[in-house]
Amino acid sequence: MSHSSGQEVYGVYVLKPFGYERERHEDDPEDPHMLLYFRDPDKPRKAANKYNVAINVKSKGSPSELVYVLKDPFEHQETIRKLEALEPGFHAANSSLFLDYERTLGLVDIEHGTMLPHDVPGQDNDLLDELEPIVHSAIRNQAQVYIFGFRYRDGKGIHKVHMNQGSVGSFGDQNGVKTDGAIIIRDQDEWKAVFLAFASQKTPTDDHSGQPRHGARSLKDQVA
Image (cartoon, rainbow, N blue to C red; front, top):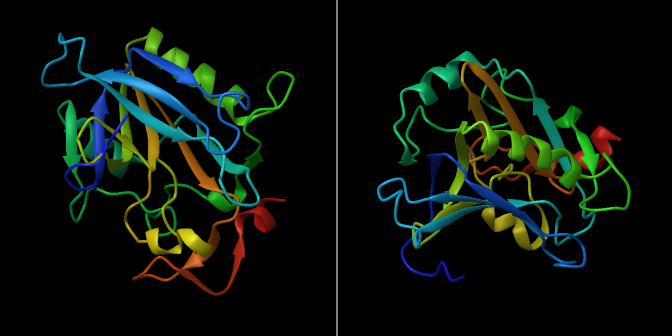
């Protein structure tokens, strides 16, 4: 699928997913994703308008693991109040509508997350095993899902739903502040949130550029 026109915009997509697909090691050993499917909120009955959320479950670099935090319940009231006011569809970020793992006070302590591989044999021991029941429950219960990340250039979905600062090497030019991703789920009056980062990303980061500060340490070294 091509997403090559227009411009990527950071913000939050408010949606109700209807299905998902998980890419295991044999499907894509280099850059696998979990794909969460939803309809165009403006034309939900048009089956051809199948949009997706691309959730990274493995890094292209080394280490390949991601760092994962599940907040259940999610109780960050400042964020909840903002999300409750949003209609279905995509909302571009503004001076108050954004997430920043390092600067949104009380949001998440990603440095104390769990480092998980993408897909290994056995039950309940990899990132797909953690994400699948959360996604399945959201679909079954027709929960409202709020996805922070970057909308595709063609508008038909969203990706980079992980921490978008502290990256090194060839990914360093993608760093920024107030542009972090997340998966936040509202199931009736119950809230939960998933936060993801690459184990190679470093904190703390510069308050303006999102680049790792001098002496910053990788999440791999901090969560181990």
